[in-house]
Length: 217
Image 1: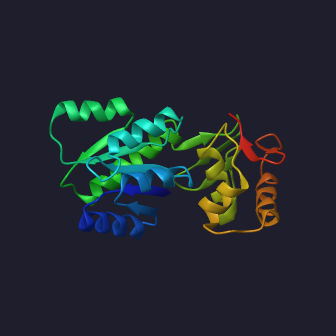
Image 2 (image 1 turned 120 degrees about the vertical axis):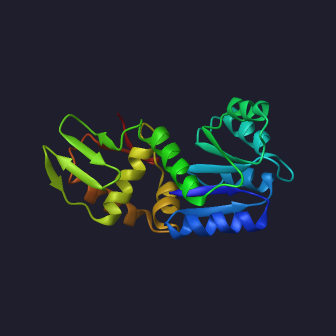
């Protein structure tokens, strides 16, 4: 999971980043709202953690702006505000949750998991790919007619990325950024996708020539 963290308090930002990286999340951290805004348009993130009072562009303004452009990434506000009007403003801008400072890092982890599940998995960790095939996102388990299909790590990562972005094309750049974290040859990605496709009915993972791959549900 890739997370964008916007927080101008240095010690808190470092603590949150280190905690999330220890549980194997990838975190890009920023103290400036404009820099975070620019990053959202250059990378794909699964969750946004946004402080409200930050330099250049505050968290409310940032979220309002990206929502206008159609970005639907779940956003959680990190706030010391206690005014209910401020919280209402956050939800109006499009956040899915907030956590009040000071907070327990394990509580933040739970909020992140809840936001991710609610947004990407339709409140269900088991995703039905068709009437016979399902994938358990928590266990990383693909089942076909009640029989487990063994997947390699790269195949699991590809399937989970396609499920997360179901009904949208996943480009080669997205595969590079979110799975490998660096440049890999498109031919390498195609080989791994084809390995996955061989373990699924032909219609589940579809190729969009020149664009990428998609799971339509």
